Image (cartoon, rainbow, N blue to C red; front, side):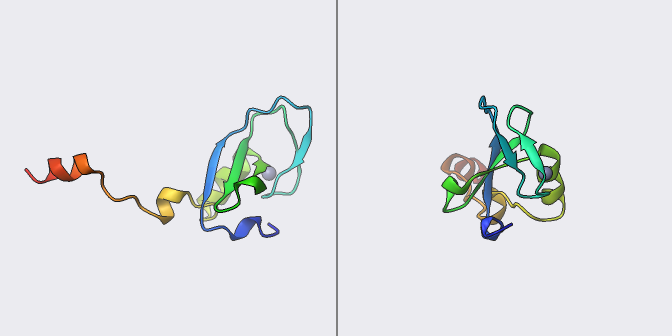
Length: 88
Ligand SMILES: [Zn+2]
């Protein structure tokens, strides 16, 4: 995935494109018409290198352990409220 695949984690969100462009999915490398339902995948550190990917390809990549999400790589500390509540 030409450097795109090197990030430790990714932000993934629905793409809301209205441009009649065609992208290339970074997972399967096939064409992806912008006006179909698909996802935006933003690598850590370089969100400007975001890529448009087929929803099914992202699901497949995640199922095989790729495209980790931030909360999977950097688990957040429990918030103040949950720490206080746990103490009772
Ligand atoms: Zn794809």
